[in-house]
Amino acid sequence: MLHPPVTHVQPTLEDVGTPLSRVTFVVLDLETTGGTPATAGITEVGAVKVRGGEVLGELQTLVDPGGPVPAFIASLTGITTSMVRGAPRIEQVLPSLLEFLQGSVLVAHNASFDVGFLRAAAAEHGYGWPDVQVVDTVALARRAVTRDEVPNHKLGTLAAYFRATVTPDHRALSDARATVDVLHALLARLAPLGITHLEDLATATDPVPAARRRKRHLADGLPDAPGVYQFRDARGEVLYVGVSTSIRTRVRSYFTAAEHRRRMNEMVGLAEQVVPIVCGTVLEARVRELRLIAEHAPRYNRRSRSPERMPWVRLTTEPFPRLTVTRQVRHDDLSAGPPAYIGPFPSRAAALQAVDALHATFPLRQCTGRLPRVPSPTASACALAGMGRCGAPCTGGQDVDGYTAVVDAVRAAMLVDPAPVVRVHAARIAALTAEERFEEAAAWRDRLQVFLRGAARAQRSARAGRNRQLVAARRDQAGGWEVVVVRHGRLCGSMVTPRGADPRPAIEALLAVAEDVAPPVSPATAAHPEESDLVLRWLEEPGVRLVDVAEDEGWACPVNGAESWQDPASTAAAVAAARVGSATTTGCDTAEGGAGPDEPVGHPGSGHVPARRVGAGGAGTRGAA
Image (cartoon, rainbow, N blue to C red; front, side, top):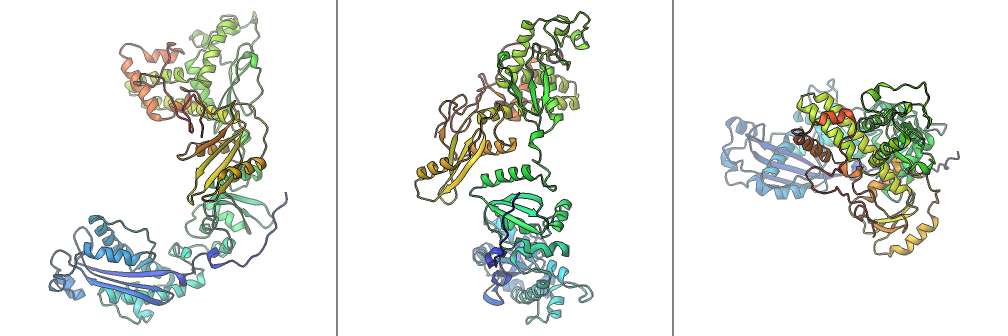
């Protein structure tokens, strides 16, 4: 495979992050009457705003704590009760202080103390706390100054060691000024360790292995845009594929203490190059990630590497059909009825759980061999026949027509209405919980949920796979339109139109260059199953409009299909209804014996057939823009 050529470009300051010399810091200190906001109040606030070593402004005020200043506090700080009497209350100081903090990084010595008091005061008086980054000079000092140099990391000790121009004296503004000098000295010490930008400072207090930090140059020049990134080794092998709304920010995080995964640390050690792929939309970026993982199978990606191995549950087409687990959706013989598949499932174990759910509901044969229309004279029935859970077609106990009725019910539960499966499992769960056999009840519940997820996924997949073209759009944050073209469940094109521009000519151009795909075998789509799930979830997000849907296919799902049971509250209501009905019926016997009564079932207590809204149109209807 050809790799894109690597071009070396001098990165701009914006590309590599915000240099610390361009960051505005507000260095803050408080004096209080005690050690906790619950029992103490603030007596003084001092703050210094600096950038690039230059003082931009200062803020200082005494604060009335709402009570007397304890004698030992007055002795320590020199702030007495008479001094704060008549001073503004903290609720009067907060507006000015919060405005002073805007657009800055908040710095304090033992920051949790100062920030804790301010957060408590803001919450008490109805002020929202700003989303500011907080830097603690105590934590920085523990990283930059060893105990061989100083006996402790108190502000007075550090100020004396770094020869600060101001000596801290337990007054807010003096201590804040001293903390400014300590901050500048600490940043000068940390610079040789690679902490030169604001993004580095966020994790500077957590030690990062030197080998990993040396690789941070791989993030230089990466775009601050949504897309996909590939870590590659010296030979060009793709080690890892990831996706982010900001490629630069996400890749930089791999070289900081924010990354704790051992596999990722190992991957970063091997990486020699990061290749970005900028995408027009977040949806396109996520889809590209899946496709690249499927194409390259990177050793450090764990998910989505083998989509072809995801299993389906299939109802076979033979004289006496049975359930099987298969990895391929085939062109089945339509004379035996429509193809019946559910899935795909994340694992074979999950697929077998769905098979068990159907076997618990319907007296379908469970033997694995293909049965002839005319039974063998030497054939013998299995134990399931004796239990009434199989009609024994192998011995002639059930003819083709009688067995076909069972198969039609199974096919309907898989493709149209899973209510019989829900009813049987709900009755069994109700009976087991009444007997306080909760672990067994949970196993039945889990099996039902796996079946419903597989059936719903197949119904959604079939809806997308049979639609030869769908165009949808959504407003983006800039006021333009995100436009996507989906063909047979595969994202075939996407773009963003500028704010105020007519999107229709752009849509026509996008349709002309969108990828052509061959129709898949239903219910599969023409894409990775997870890609189709991503596209379908995007289509169902608020604000998405269906611009164009193929007239003959529409965009609908079964009104009372498995999707209408995806909310756990629906199955919980079915269990509750079964528990109420157990006074007159034996739900446990029904569950053990196979199919229950034939009457249709809606959501318990609803009084009507469950409906589901899909896309822009209602269930059972074709959505339109």
